[in-house]
Image (cartoon, rainbow, N blue to C red; front, side, top):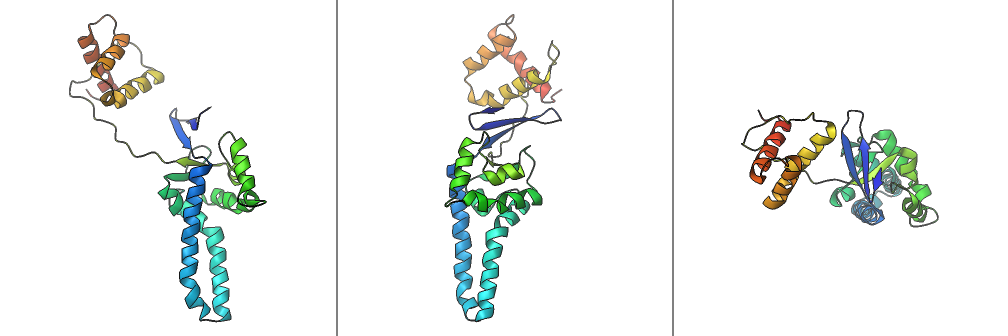
Length: 225
């Protein structure tokens, strides 16, 4: 299901992955950074290679070929889907199911850049990306890959010190996700807002007791005894 630029994927293990799809602007900026890096490498080696005559020219053309076609593949496969440009823009390439991109997927998406380039300046890729529900260019569609924003690493707060208490109702997966969300977002909520949410869970208790009990149930979900 796609809401705005977020893609939700339910895995066979029952977990839900939420991927933030990258649009044309950050992808274009990442490509520009990688293009400058490749250009800088070619400028640095051009002068010494010209001193080698025709052999140097051949090496220069070989390096140009390798940089153009294998620079993104090398980084995407061995650097978790991130070329230097993508890393600077906080982007990464993954498979359509959220798994890390492999050699075959990276090869296909990059070899088809020629089609995305047609007739100039990635016009075809840009148009296809705009009409794609998952912001994929032709290469991404063929390889079933996505370009996503890499979320900043977050550390889940530790359970509180009030101890755990099993809930008085059977917990299903949705309940557990709600309780974990309450735990994760609790530090950003006001005390009054937390009491308001606790009243929904335990309307028979006063505010203080309801909040304390809800926190103990959350601790139980987090594994506290």
